[in-house]
Structures are given as structure tokens and as C-alpha cells.
Image (cartoon, rainbow, N blue to C red; front, side, top):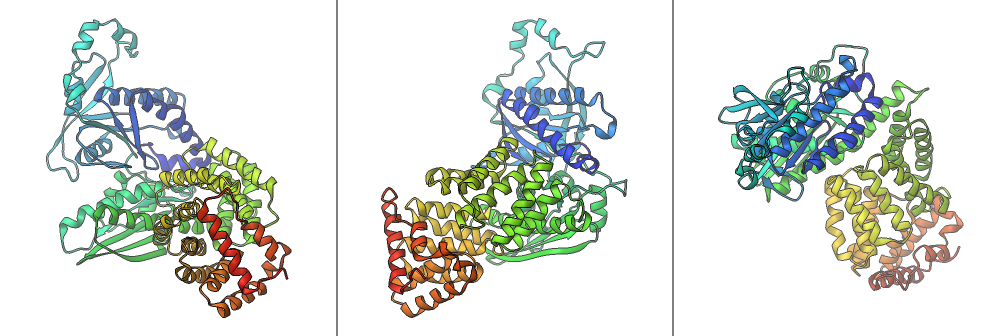
Amino acid sequence: MWSAYSHLMSIDEEGTHVRLADFVKDLIEPKIVENNGRLIRSMGDGFLVEFASALDAVRCGLDIQRAFADHNAGLVPDRQIQLRIGINTGDVIVDERDIYGNSVNIAARLEGLAEPGEIYVTRGVRDQLQGYPDFSFEDRGDRRVKNIEHPIRVYRVRYLRDQDGNWLTAARRRLSGAAYKLGRPTAVLAAVALVIATVSTVGVVTWRDEGRRPARASILVLPFANLSNDPTEEYFADAVTDDLTTDVSRLPGAFVIARATAFTYKGKAVDARQIGHECGVRYLLEGSIKRIKTRVQTNARLIDAASAVQIWADRFDNEVTDLFELQEAITGRIAASLDIQLIRAESRRALAERPASPDAVDLRLRAMGLYISGITPEHTLAARQLLEQAVRLDPQSAEAWAWLADLLASDYLNRWNDTGKTQLKEAEEAAQRAVAIDPHLALAYFAYGFIHRAKEENAEALDAFNEALRLNPSFARAYAQKANELINLGRPQEAPLLVEKAIKLSPRDPSLGVFYWNLGRAHFFANRYGDAIPWLRKAVEARPNLWHNWLYLVSANALVGNKREAETVLRGFNDQPLFRDPKFTLERVTVFEQANPNENAVIVEGRKKFHQGLLETGMSAR
């Protein structure tokens, strides 16, 4: 969508990010709504939008382009932001979250043909609007585009201008009302199923100034290679690339080059440093798909574009079942892993480049890197302090506010760092600030989930985790915490599948110990104590600093008659320095896990069983 997007980010990353966010919030989204459009998905620097008619789509595009032209009039060329837009009409395939089909592909190809500041449409759109006095259509001839069998007749559409170059907004209202109405083709009203408008990146941005750095966490997803013997599998590799581009664009702080640019490198042996230089990105994601009988093998690699060094790789197999589920599993796992890897890489870079004078983004990245390197009370406290500095330097950083809310609420729930009601209120205020700045930030709603849980508002917490997943379907921690909230609502039988999905999405997640705990807790509250024990044991091994991992393992062993094992685990708990604090006595733990008569009967019974197992093991007040 944005002309010379990476170039602008390199000149003024923070300022450009704010300007683009303002354009989207104040201009683009209101225009879409005003013209009966529906935003299907945002792709980092582009959008896919569905409209009810060709008229709505073209008017929306032209009004947006005119507003950008007015804004750019007073700016020097390298500070201007321009769009290019492609509009097509036709049938599409619809599911819960997205739309697909040849019509979408054609619209995307049109966008790639359009010049900055222009709108290109197909013959179908032109034919439906040819009777309107508002528009001028310039025939640009037949064009052949990638993956489309037949040439496409392309037209550039503009508003008519008078001789002085002024827009004929007043003149068109003077035209005959009858003629205006007669110009509306009936096909728009009844025959056209859907009209698609896409806006995306402007080709390849050439990097000329060696003194400028690419945007932080900027990435290009290269087309995944099809290594199967069957060339018809090519479409699946392309679909994985498309979905990955969309999923990665949802990661907080990531700047993703749109797929139209990425596909220009398909099948070409290009050096990573050359691509980074041309597109102004720090990272490249590349990979391959190979079908082996009933299994699909996926390889993914994250490359540092400056050095061409591989900094992360993953290889995994999936059983071929439903193709949509397979595609979702592959892209979800890579996107979830990539989130963690980008945080680590950018945190190290921030420390190396500006160790003495970090800016707000550096501070946020350092905090995130510290947190995921090991989730401990010391790390969360240090990360909170870094985030507090970050929001003081940049009060408009939604990501920093959301992370701060998350850590404050987590510390409150874990009883870490003497966090109390004051900090819980601060967490809520931070989450409110994050959502006010960016209402589409999944982490902010995830933090709200913790806050509602701390306030014993379990239904509201579940809603918050659901919203986080709607905004980021690859958010592994949100799946696990949604499962935990279902347990709190007395529905433990629904939780295991969600936790298993979290583990599949992010098998090396820093919160993996919490995932194990969630799964063990689900089995515990479903009275399957034997099934709970292996997962609770893994939770203790992965996260020995969480008291509930230990004590639920103690209780589960006691309840199945493994008293000796229960006593051994209890001794291990007592030997942990963190748990020698008076708040982890039997009396205090009973308060933490107090059976509340107002809770669901399943939870009341589960908490009673937990206390019973501890008492049978002989846990005392110490």
C-alpha cells in the first residue's frame, strides 16, 4: 500500500509509524465504513477490503487517493506517502476469517500494476460504472500477470476534472437526476456477488543511503519452495507464504513487506544481502514444503539480511488431513516461533547498537528479551522498570503499555515482587492506554484477560482471551490461558485441546511450563488425577519457580495413593528458596486456592480435593 514504505521507515521510524497509524485510523478506516466496505485483513503495509458494489469501491479508493494527494502537496518527495489500489469484481470463497479465489488474486495483481497514487480496475468494474458522469476511465490495454491464464484488460480510473483541474464535485450534482440514476447498471445491484479492493506495497524499494538503517523487526517472507515431486503442490506452498505474510504482519512491532513484492523473488537465486539492500529489511524468512506420502515436511529459516547468517531454523512434520487445517498449523507454528525469535534478535541488536542511550523502542525490546530469556520474579521486575522508562519516553507506544500491563497482572497472579491491588490498578490503566492507542493489539486484550481473572471476573476474562485470539490466531499463550479460564468456569473437559494447540504452535515457548500446568490442571479438575501427574511433573521441571506446579503435583499424587512420591515432591517444594517466604505456608496457600461457594460446583470440588491431597501428604504451616 505505502509507496516507499521502508524508505520512510528508515528516515523516521517512530514518526512514520505514528503517521501511518493516524492515516489508517482517521482516514482509511472511516472511508471504508462510509462506503459500505468491510476490512478483511491488514497485511502490514496493505489491506484487503470487501465492498457491496463497484461504485462503493471506486468512490472509496478515489476519495482516499484525493485526501493523500492533498496531504502530500506541501511535502518534499521523500516524505510523501502514496498508495496504489487495484479493484476487481467477481465471486470469492468465504470462510470465518478471510476470502479467497481468483478474483482476489486478480485484484492483487492489479495493485502491482498501478502507479503510486493511482487506481487500476478491470473491465468488469469499468463496464458497471461506465454510465456514471463522475468517473473517467483510461484504457491501459491488455496485461498478462502472474498465475492468471488469460490477459486482463486494465483501466485507470479517476474523477473527471474541469479545465482548471478542479474536482467536479459540484458539477456532478447539477447533472440530471434521472440520467444519474439511469447510469446505474442493474448488475451491480443484483448480479455481482462481491467486489474486492486491495491496497499493498509499491514494488521493490531500493536502498541507496548506506547510512540509514532498515526499520526494526522489518521482514520479507520469501515464497516457500515446493520440494514435492508433484508440481501441482505449488499452490499449497504459495498459500502458506500468503498466510505467513498475514500472520507475521500481526506481530507487534513487525514491519512486513507485502506479498506482491515478495513474489517477485520467487524461483530466483538471490543473495539475502541483496534482498535486504533492495527492500530495506533486516530479516528474511524462507522455507520449503515437501509432501512425503501422507505427511508434509516443513522447513523454515530466519536470515539476518545484513550478514546472510541463519539465526533460527525449525523443521517439523504434519499429517495430511484437512488442507485448511494443515495450512493453519504450519503458518501458526512458524508465526508463533518467529515472534519469539524476532524479540530475541532485536533485543540483542538494541543492546549492541545503543547500550548507553537507548530509545523507547530499545527499552521495550530489552524488556521483552529479558522476560522471554527466563520468566523469573527478578526478570519481570527488571522488565517492568524498563517498560516504565519506555512509556515515559514514548507515551504513544501501545506495545510498551500492553507489555507493562501483562507483566504487572502476571506478577499479581503469581504473588511475585510484592505486587498488590495498587499494581493491579496500574495494570488496568496500562491496558486501557494500549487499547486506546491501538484497538487491534492482541497483547493488550491478553493482559485484560489476566486483569479480569485477578478480579475474579472469569466470564470477562474468557471474552478478553477470545478477542486476543481473534486478533492474532497464532497467539499460543492466549490459547493456553483461554483453556485455564474455561477450567475456572467449570468446563475443564474443553481445555486440553486448546492447550495442546498452544504446545503445537510454540513447542519452545518461554511459557511452555505454564502450558503444561494448564493441561495438568485441566485433568485435575476433571478428576483425572493420574492423567494430570505427567503434565504437572513436566510443569515443575520447566518452571520450578511456580508454587502451584509443585503443590498440585503433590496433591495429585496423594489422591491416587502415591503418598511416598507426594512427600518427595513436597520436600522439593520446601527446598526451593523462593517458597520459604511466609506467604507459601499451608494457611496462605489455602487462601490462594480458597473454595468459593459462589463458584461453579466443579471448581469448588476441585479446590477441596487439592486441599485434601495436601493434608494427606502432611503439608504443614512450617
